[in-house]
Length: 155
Image 1 (cartoon, rainbow, N blue to C red):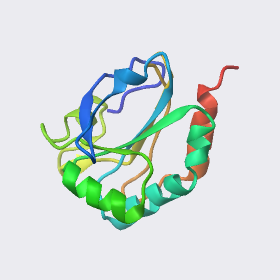
Image 2: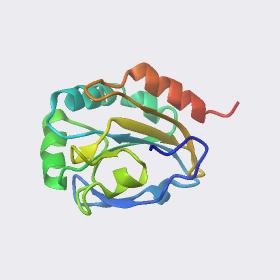
Image 3: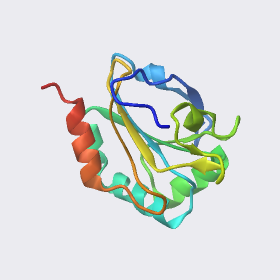
Image 4: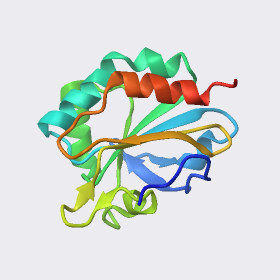
């Protein structure tokens, strides 16, 4: 079962598409984070989703939100895909141990060997403030991201 809103987001460290180590807690006290779990690089729905995020990156930047994509692909596959699609954000390799971060967040699909399409919006204190998961084969909408980013804003 996926982690619930208003709970502490588990910290992790993964390598991005360039081999740089990215730790969730490095954003603590500074920025909110959108963790975007996706099944596999180079797949049709995932490419469409992440291209939409690429084309609307200002939505995240203007709200002080760091966008992090996460899949079980290797950093080499993520780099090739990221360069092909010109993604301007980190793609993190949850490659080994296979899907460990997706498992911690409760979104790893054991029978498939990859994560579900799940998004967690985490505030600067490391608390999950909004999340959404779509059914297999269903893309996440940009409107869902807008609503989730709105949950991060102080009332």
